[in-house]
Amino acid sequence: MVKNILNFVVGFLFTIIIVLLAMVSFGLLVYPLEVYLSVLITIALTFVLSYYSNNLRRKIFRFGHGRKPVYAIVLTSLIAIAMVAVFWIPSSTFESTHSSVKPYGIKPEYIKNHDGDKIAVYIHRPDKPNKLAPILFISGGPGGRPSTKVKDYLDGYMKLGYVVYTFDPIGTGSSPMPKSNSSFTIADEVENVNDILKHYNLSQVNLIAHSYGGNVATRFIEKYTEKVNAYLAVDTAPIYSMQENYPNEEQDSKFAKTVESTRENKTDLKAAQSLTDFSSLRERVRMFYGTGLMQILEKNYIPYGEYSEYDYFISLLISINSGGKPTDGKLENRLYSTSNLLITKSLSESPDFTKELRIKNTPPVLVIHPEFGVVPWQIHYKYKEFFSNTKFVTVPGADHGVWNSKLGSKILLEDGDLFFRSEPLSNEYTSKENPFPPVK
Image 1 (cartoon, helix red, strand yellow):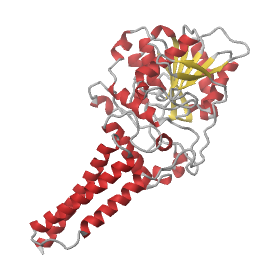
Image 2 (cartoon, helix red, strand yellow; image 1 turned 90 degrees about the vertical axis):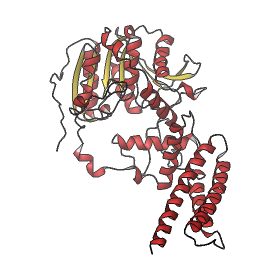
Image 3 (cartoon, one colour; image 1 turned 90 degrees about the horizontal axis):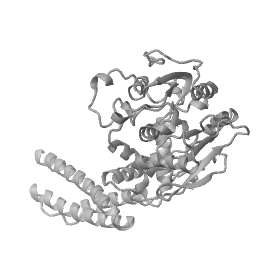
């Protein structure tokens, strides 16, 4: 009895080891070889390992040699089926799900950046320009682009006489793919903004940044302080982090304890959706293994499949995590997955630039804090540590896409205009306390 139990346990452990070795084998082979060759070699290695491990197990427990390699055939067959299903069969894409991503709504102008790649720039030109510094909007992501709802919001500034610029980051929307994926770094993102200013001879701008765009904006301000008149930060952290702490700083446990979670929109709880509602287990394994392999091996390109698969999956994942509600798996916004992965990695490895930022004569900052945003209040309040003149405005009822609500769009436009004109704000929030503490 004991012998049989030990035999089963050892056989089970051997099986786990063989499965793990198959995963490692494929991962090491898929970049230098074609996918189908990597699968075939891995299957062959699996059969050899399972055959000899089974003989070893039978020898250990003195069962004698089996007449037929049943164990090796069954295990190899199961792994072969799984590998073909995961690595050969494509997963969902924007095209296959009939997701419709609307164009921005303005014909883009194409300029060359510092690497010779092209950037699609959209310009809102007013009939009667005012004499104030133009506005440059930086979208979220990484790998994101401004949406049609952003256009509607920025049109409001155009009607007030501002010339407004925004753009599709490299590789997204109407901006072509770069010559090299090595261009996807935070340093390049900052220089791309400067390329736009140089191309249009803009000596100074009012920056508006949303979400991840704030990481580009703060680093741009640190490097080109004199080129920014004012900075409107829309639900974005002062430094890259959606966690309690920032990279390149010692873990501040005291600060971490002060950070409260963002308020949940109770009206949306019944409509909450998860990744499993829109993707199969096969698709999740295919995409998570692919993106994981890319990061572990520090590669700048995907190991198998098409970029369109990864774009859809990463877009779906981020949409759900930020409170989005895809309808039947259809998405309206598209993130470029490689840009998202590589720039995120670049951010986590970038040197600490905050010491320089703290001692510079920084432009005034207006932080927009929505009730149902993604950045906790205590992290928003950190802006005061890095910028000498920081103000806050709260937006009840708004989520991360503040302009999606009527009140959010109104507050953004009116207070943004007052802020850019250096006039008193209509509803400045001056307390240190969280305006929207979590509802228990």
